[in-house]
Length: 351
Ligand code: 1HN
Image (cartoon, rainbow, N blue to C red; front, side):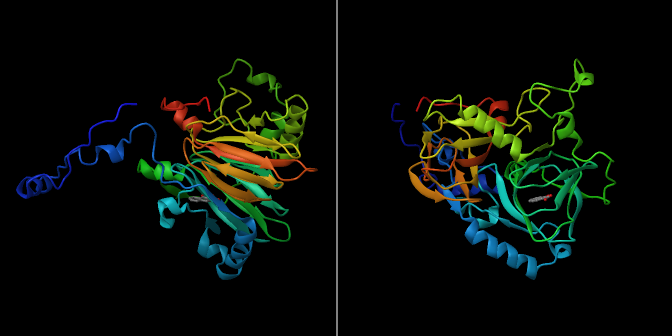
């Protein structure tokens, strides 16, 4: 790369010229050109950051005592990346992540909004989400989609706290000034709970009636963890040590990522295994489903356990090492690769 010449500064310009521009809502580009368009690589504000569930859980449970659901609508603690300022609700530049608590008998009311969301269930039994009338059970490790503008509400019919991780493309929607929500009535559930996971029970098999038909955008709404884990274990048996055991969540109808902006994948680290993920241009958030690992994210070392969350900036090199010599570790990853692919900027780097 050649060294580009330094560009002129604002201070070099005559005061009267600057004042004349300002009065007419004009700004010269060259003083800020390099900040908006750094040479060689992006300069992300996102910092490699770890949130420990051991820290989050007591604060989330206390929110359950302090703030009734009616006063919260969604009782969530947001994993706010300090590189963006805590009020920005950024986990990365495009990805919002928080953890949500619902207590027995509570109902987080029905609404829909332009940001797309997913839930990854962390703990508790008896919770369920209703998406457009479909009742979806929430069990630990399950991935549940609530795509853009789909009605959704959460209900807890069991005992004990239920906690899940929410990931949304909220920062993106805020960035394009398109974020808003509509409140709704309690949904009437169809008499076919978890229908999408029943119809699309197994990869490679689709309802016959869907063959040749134009696929609906979101045929499958829930991926039970037990099936994801079994698929990872099967893949591990056919993957060389040191090669990532990594599965992507896709639409069973199109084979494409299941949401337009965010991508979801699951990783297994075999006992004692260390893997370096192929470096790419996407930003990502890792959630430990179970296990104990050491992550190196763009040169920052972070030790993570069950339910901890790690933010990785765009273009980061990520190495993951299972700290257990006897147990596998499982991770769930959210990234913005689908968005980057759609706008033609997704890159995979050689190292
Ligand atoms: C939202 O609608 C949910 O539906 C969770 O559970 C977190 C964060 C920001 C904006 C909307 C939910 C959210 C959210």
